[in-house]
Length: 131
Image (cartoon, rainbow, N blue to C red; front, side):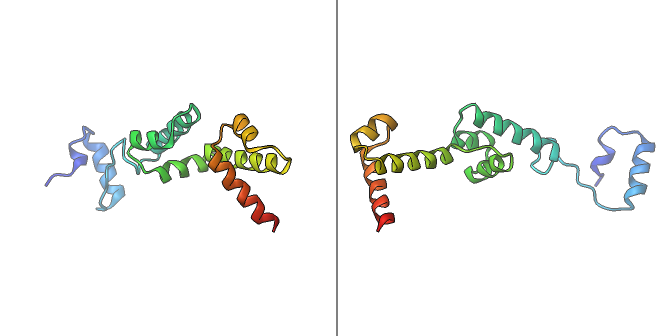
C-alpha cells in the first residue's frame, strides 16, 4: 500500500529528503481541523472565548463545537475569562449582605430579580453561619 506522502503532490527530491530524515519512522499526517493540530486548537479556543464574551451560553457553544460543557469551561478558565457563574456567586454574597443590613425579602427580590425561595434559602444559610 502506497503511503500518503507519495500522493500529496510533493516533488521526488522533497519526498526523498523527508524519508531520509525520518529513517523509516511512521508519519501521521493530521487534518487541519484535527483536535491534535495546535494551530486549529488555538483558533478554536480563541473563537470559543470571543463567542462566550459576546453573550453565548456554554451549552450552545458546546453543541456548536461538538465538545462537552466542561471542556468549554476549561478553555475559558485557561484564557482567564470570568464565567457568568462567578457573577452569580457575587450576587449571592450581595443578597446575604442585604439580609444582614435588614432588607426585607420583597425588597431584595425587587432589586436583584432573584426568586423568593432562593432568598429564603440564602437567609437560612446566613442563620446557620451565625450559630
